[in-house]
Every structure is written in C-alpha cells, then in structure tokens.
Image (cartoon, rainbow, N blue to C red; front, side, top):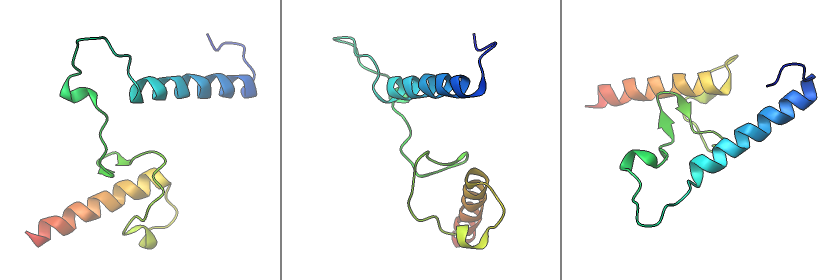
Length: 90
C-alpha cells in the first residue's frame, strides 16, 4: 500500500492514518442501546509501565537527573524509580 511512495507523501499518509486511529480510539462509534465494556475506555493514568501518556507536558519528577535519553525512555526510568521509592516507603 505504501510501496513506491516518496518520503513526504509516505509520512503524510502515515500521520493521517495515525490521526484517524486516534480519533476512533477516543471517540468510538456508538450503537444505540449498547454499553461499552469497561476495558474499552482509554487509560488516563499519567504514569504507566510504557512511559508517560502521549502529549503530556507536565512536570516529571526524576527527569532532572536523567540525560541523553529519549522522552519515552526517560519517563520509563522515572516510573521505575518511583516504583522503587514507593516500595521503600511501605
């Protein structure tokens, strides 16, 4: 499907597909009289084992001490440090 596309049209197509997927995930089609399962709703926690939620622009404790990591890797490391800290607090 993407075979033969140059870089810019390929990126535009990928971004359009991603945006469409995000819209469907956040605004699912509604069927009258049906309830969505509890597992349907997106996770709204800030800290997850996969790192922070996309587009979160708030304060992340522990990031001030981490250098030369991507945002995703540094937030995963911050999550691990927070888990260890909470483990010691109990």
